[in-house]
Length: 431
Image (cartoon, rainbow, N blue to C red; front, side, top):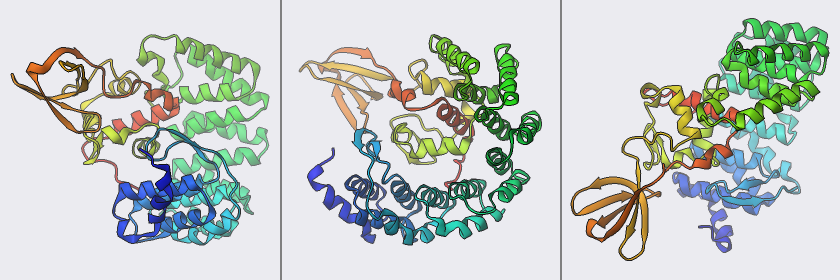
């Protein structure tokens, strides 16, 4: 439970190297600093993100906190509970964090990507030469090169059109997709639409998805007409399932009356669908496993890691998921996310026990004999209860929150399904 009066003392631990190895404590210190929000604390958190002696996960969380510093947050970064921090305008924030960008850029691929986003958010143009080098280095991770390209765009770096053209011809599909999307902002519609249609016709899944979304942002009639044609294929059941969600989002955001109407009617019908697999069918295939991994391990709204573990990392209240992609099909994974009570995993059924003294205990039955029932509670603690003191017993719901789907977009769900379906014994390494 938060103790507001002690928040400054917790924030003061941010620079103490003796605590760097304590992940839980450092995340709380970062969160306390973020909530207090002054410039000196921002500098301390940025310094932590740049410190090569700190563990990568701690550095990454610090960088993400600095990126969000002025934007505020609705949910607590540690607890995931509703504890809003209003948007703010901290005086001199850029000057506080700028000296530490270089140290962040020398970290892991994931930290480097967070530093690039941070520089983009705050308009720190000093990093443009480094961004060019990162984009041009094909040994870098695709996500790093894409983040560099996006930051160059946000900073309006010189030669952007040439950089985008190079990206659109890159050997890597993710980079090509981002390059083509950027070119769509720089070239006339008549020149870019044929290239988008070629990507949809013969590109990789990620290129096709990106091209469909870009068509939705263009306002020329050729783009809109193509989206209408694709919608006809969707209505007839002929559209590739991997791009259905992208078409829906493109139509909804196009601003064109007919397409918006079609998307709204589609959404109305979807919301009335009783079968959860049909209701969320657009999230079954076509996701991004890397984004799904980020949601699983880092998104407080989802809180996946509190209950589930992968490769030994995470909680023990829910099923272990390291081989879930081998053991279960995509439809099972999707249903487990959007309708957790439909099929409760064996060994994780919950029981609700009313005791003689009036107390009610709910948990997963981990062991039971004629004398004692052992429940695992939501925090992982074990509680032993005497059978003779149980007055009533009922089956409980899944320990998975029913409303977790409310915290996720359809794209988030699709990415989670993709990530989980890729788990086949060895978890994807942290970037």
